[in-house]
Image: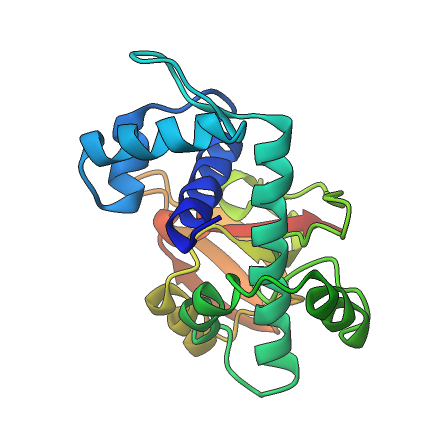
Length: 217
């Protein structure tokens, strides 16, 4: 596959996972920042390779071959993110763009050795699951912080927004994967949330709370 074909597969994989349904060419065009006509041309190529199910004016989905191929791209991306953070001391807001380049390396042997070298991690630095060599994913039960009730406590296990700006904001607030977050109260006016992190109380917006995943404890 070309780099472009891999990027399309990965985008369709993320869209179908988020929407839990078939996706439109317009949705793909938006995430790929291109014209719908260009998406249509690419979908025809991917369909010929038995990677997507595509019929004009209908939704798009991945075939079983397409799902596995997409998971392998995601696997490489997330393993490289772990490597960059754990071994090269990059911060979690710096690694996405670099991993976007590294995910296109073709050597399966290299990626499997990288996986073993890192101790076979199951999550990337942002808490997203890493598929294993067979495409299997270990899922954990998690909730958005905004969905918690007063006096519930959770451990931060992931972020919905992986933008550099959001991750830098979390760093400033001392919120990271593994942080224990106590849900103190929610304002009815703007739905902002009062939380306790590392014995420190602070208020965060509903938008921020809606982008933090926690596991209840």
